[in-house]
Length: 458
Ligand code: NAD
Image (cartoon, rainbow, N blue to C red; front, side, top):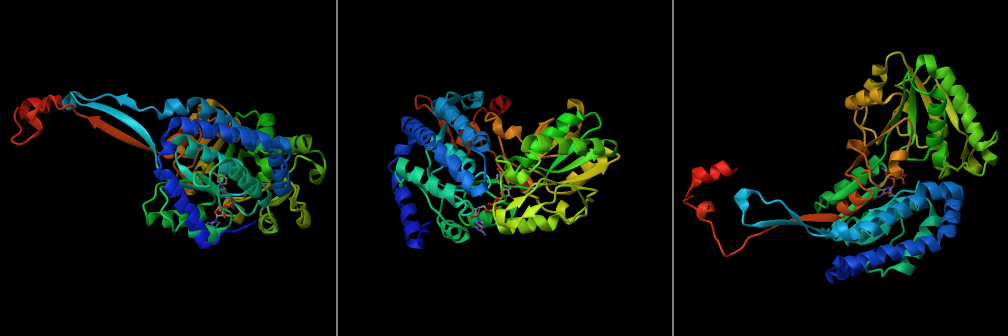
């Protein structure tokens, strides 16, 4: 994969600055046209995208569609349908004391944006933010992760075939390329990745006070209440955990279950994972691989906590780790100190749910919070905790609704996107007050005539 030199990176950046200065991206019909072109190139390359995701992560075409291509297409259609409406300058109420002025609010593109994405959903996480860039009228430099080279190369080709590089361009590379890119003065940065790298990006952006969205990770807890439907809970937790072999930012990281329900929950989890993937996970065409050998070694190291209730098989050469349930894990174990990001599921038990809530609140605010049980109990627990998103009696699903803002809070992220939120994230909301000249009320000028009367209008 060609990695650009510092001078070549600067050239792409300068090209985009000049393109932006033509103001053509501000025209809403231009943006609509580009969204439609993006849709066409995705549809034309669907099979190639599926193949690349298979090569990089052994994602099945079914999973690739449900968790990457389908999510992008769905949100893309939503942008195509609404970009005109979202972009309209809107009249807003003007309070009496400002009349006869009129007030409007317009959306304008923040300008030149940088989108940096990780490897776990490499297609979705590069193209979903791109929708916001296009519909708001920004130019964009896209930097995919080098860990998934097949899809990174394909996305570069798709973008180069579809867009003028002065408008949208893919730049390949890793940490060094990002360091060079971050020296430039972007108008907006959209970063998806780990909280550790998120801090590096934020520090670099601080030099220019560049606004940003940070989509980060963390440990998303999964609580199973006494009143839960255990069979459904087991099935849906396992589904959420094993999609992409656990390499999902919002995967249920660990499970806290009432001690009286643990045995039944674990039995049913094993039953459902076999039903989904068969007896031999390594032979299943639906079970993905771990991204690289380093990640396999890291996960292997975490398997020593608690006792292995089920699984534990590792084949490094195949980057395979079987779904592994770890029983009798304690809050202080190493596996409970970092985001797992793999198919290991620690199980902890509580006598009183406050123990689990206490643990969640002592740690960083998670990206997602999952509760299996009644809506009433879920509401009560939501009051006691904070997270980027929530699912009640399911996992992951909140990411798939483009009407919901998606993102983290605190250590799991800064600001939201998806649907209209993506449009807003890349936009400057410009407030305008327009005052007629046929009248010039004197009360705002010294010596503040009728001050007592005017004060009452506030
Ligand atoms: P990462 O933070 O290591 O890398 C993300 C991007 O930053 C990559 O493009 C990488 O090349 C670049 N990068 C890495 N080190 C850098 C450095 N020192 N300076 C500048 N750039 C650098 O993350 P990852 O391993 O690719 O992805 C996994 C992480 O992403 C997990 O923590 C996961 O939770 C998180 N994630 C979050 C979301 C979300 O929507 N919130 C989605 C997917 C993944």
